[in-house]
Length: 333
Ligand code: UT7
Image (cartoon, rainbow, N blue to C red):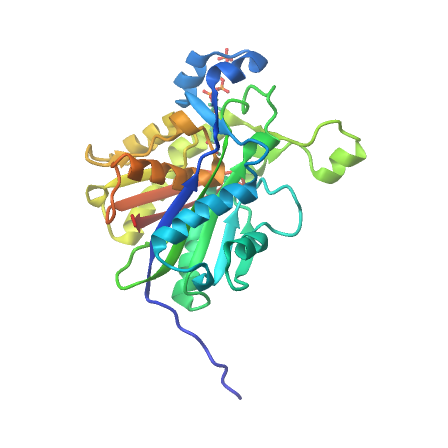
């Protein structure tokens, strides 16, 4: 039998660069409350959100992705043509096909990089990091660009009390590449499809068209059930990611959970007994819940504010519709 040739990648990987893009339009709570009979006080108390950013017409998923990616590529110190694969996590590229990634790979100047989208909602960025890291280790790519981008304002019903104040827009990106030392820990990921209907599109496209619906489908969330799942179950996943990376909470410098709700972040930090020295991402207050973009946006904010610095050990955990989740320990670039 003829033996097939095989490739081997780098034994270790790391994040070489991270970039992000925040839309220009700031939307304070006062702008969303009237339509949903709410108050600034309630929103801040129940979610920690003071304001969010919604994209303008010009700030498309494509434009925001390119801006975030340029920052990540520049920090990585590589040329676009060195990127072998582009993985885009999004649920708001509103074309069923083609994926967003090939267009981005072209416009960023890669040399026909492999390019595809993944749909893991709020957990998408951590899925992208896991895939990228495994691809570099397996040898199918040397540099992978993982992007998380959302324009959730496009698919949010401004009259829905349970979602109108939460969701927001933005983009983040990371370049994953080879490393001499481990810089991305093993992923702990999974799904709970039994709870598939807790966060969904209100109806599928075909049904909406058949019913001649005057509105496009939007997001529907059984918030309280999602909250309880996230607050109680996700700390266990985060702990498993630490265990698999061989680090303890005492070794951690930075905790960057998906920015879903400030109270979920606090509940996880309490359950994990994070020591006081661990800096916790709280970008949701200013940014809202940007789904797949929230972790790179939050990390970038911490780097800008000096709360996270190069070489720090950070824990990522992301969770959302599916229900799907993923967590890993990384070294901050
Ligand atoms: O990113 C993907 C994953 N998503 C998440 O992790 C989000 C998880 N869920 C949440 O963050 C929270 O469930 C929300 C912030 C969305 C809602 O907070 P909650 O504490 O779970 O609210 P609730 O739905 O249990 O409602 C509590 C009360 C109710 O009133 P009564 O029955 O106690 O009188 C609601 O009618 O708050 C009322 N309420 C509101 N009041 C003012 C619900 N929505 C609103 C609102 N403004 N927008």
